[in-house]
Amino acid sequence: MNMFLTARFGSRPLRSPVAVNDGAAAMKKTRLLALTTSYPLHPGGSAGVFVQSLYRHLSPEYAIDVICPADPGTPGTVFDDFAEPDIRIHAVRYAPPAFRTLAQGSGGVVASLGRAPWRVCWLPALLGALFWRCLVRAGEADLIHANWSICGAMAGVVGRLRRKPVITTLRGSDVSRASRSRLDRLILGAAVRNSCIVICVSEAMAKRVRAQFPHRTTDVHACLNGVDEAFFQISRTTSDGTVLRVLAVGNLIRLKGFDVLIEAVARARHREQMRVRIFGNGPERESLLALAVSRGVSCCFEFAGTVPATDMPARVSEADVLVLCSRSEGRPNVVVEALAGGLPVIATDLEGVQGMVVDGETGWLIPVDDADRMAAALDHATADRAELLRRGERARAIARTQIRTWTETARAYDALFRTALVPEKKQHPSCVG
Image (cartoon, rainbow, N blue to C red; front, side, top):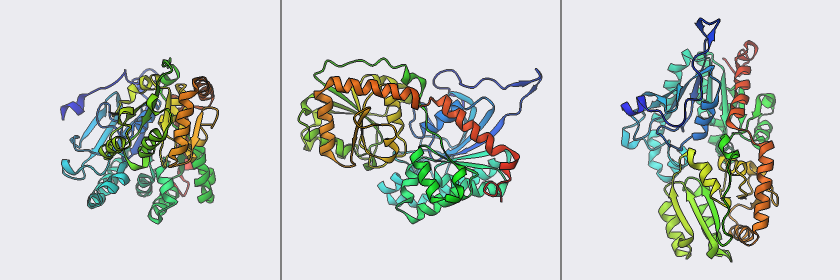
């Protein structure tokens, strides 16, 4: 337990010490209470790393309490973020350690239930523990920020009870599920109704939410996830032209579509020249390995396990092309990082990808589950290295004008947080009861 109370990880803290007013009294920090079902609890953890990146880059004027589920290896207590002393993590215990597998894993709560439906018995305990901790901590908070619609629905109730403004960030999967599930529509509706500001991680998602909730149009904003500045500084290595180095990143679950990538390589004419490195873990690892063996392409694939966020720039620099084969996404961070690093992208034609990957310019857009089209794109990238290089250069040029760093993203969030804190906004019916 002491490891979690004292550990620090990564570079020096991004925040400065407490600001001083008139050289004497310490300036009062804005207390932000954050509610999320995913957040890194260990050095190198990948669950919710984009949520962590946002909070780490907020201005020093914020003191942040993050409420999230504990996992099997976490004591379920309060400890500092590994690199950020102004972020306190409240890891909530909802089950005995061995059974804390409902959240913080590959694909989040929904994917966990899909793998083991019996885990639903722990869902009331998880939601109840998160709600109670949020209710208790909200008394000291100036503002509540919820991640995903389920947290937004809970935070909205807490906000009304405690008369605190609530901002909810929708991150893609919650919005897409709402188009297929009545329960998810009800959850999304509760989150939107009880949040004074709703943030979406892509403009396409924001348009969909505005259309679904026209009475809240002016309160729905698009605020795109950022990337670390290191991706813009990547000096990419070039291969000798005999091997196409393919990078793929994601949880090994059905949603990510790695089975389609394996099938595409098996159908490609130049498969002998393709070397695919997949970074990520999950319950489908063994079945994907078996599929690669059965299709005769196991020698083309390396399942390399998880990669710390700090190592991703190096992984991008070593690749020739990124493949995103997902069946559903919000605004995938790995695509943003690849483009910022000058890496062309072969991606499924999803709403959250269309605004970033331009077919024929920065990469290739492929219909979902279309292994033949993906095979053709991989063959094109292998056979025409000049075109591959051109699309990579175009990706970096566009990224410099259209992709934000995390510092810029945090600045945009800061502006919205400040909007929610002005007296007029705090009295909005959606902020308080």
